[in-house]
Image (cartoon, rainbow, N blue to C red; front, side, top):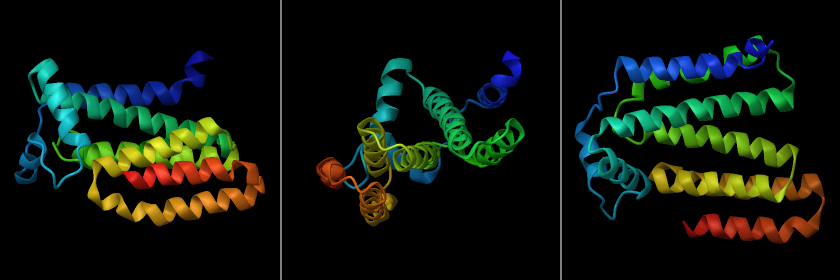
Length: 194
């Protein structure tokens, strides 16, 4: 019974461990050099993550291991979120998880922002669903945190500002609870500062 309940977590954990065991070596592309040293042009989160992991473990393989683990956690989290709100069966959850897992085979060990941005994107979608279906300050805080992490990871996520605005306005009108308007405005303002 426990195996059936946690089959998704077991499969994703097995996949993450297999990837890390198979190839934990960091692949450095020409573009990777800009993340190995911080600069003012690129968002700071990924270079900061690399420098922290290198200072602790003295190897770039630790970055690959960390980003692969974060990817696995994000896949499990979004699968469980989708299952909770759309009442998915185990087979459907596993199928969705496999579909979400397949892209990481291409970039999990590359020192570029794709892996960590993919994980934060999955968290963003999960927290957006949670905020839409269950409007709580905690869900709104997690959604805003995921937005800020996305903005601190890649410049390409600047497009997310209009999406955030539409999402927050939609939540206000769906909920028709204008007392929460202050929090939405505050969180939108905080995410725009980044």
